[in-house]
Length: 102
Image (cartoon, rainbow, N blue to C red; front, side, top):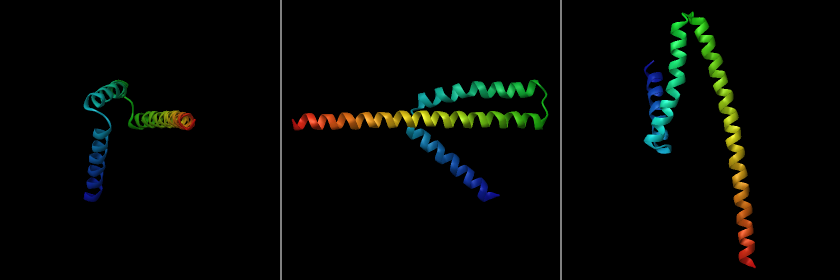
């Protein structure tokens, strides 16, 4: 069990380090605060409706699946946008090279 716990702690530290390198503190704090609101709404809903453990787990699994699908769609949109920008940059670069040669 100790090895599993050590791996989880190492993964959390790795994710925290990568996050710190990619986003500034103010941006990270804003994103965390935005995500805290729906999380608290889910917790309050579960607690106030006296759901059974199985029902709460079911709804959490449904929300997790929805989040996964949304993340995949967002990733597809972002990758498409990045590819389009790279293509534009390549076209601009080739037209600049042609203009320099003339």
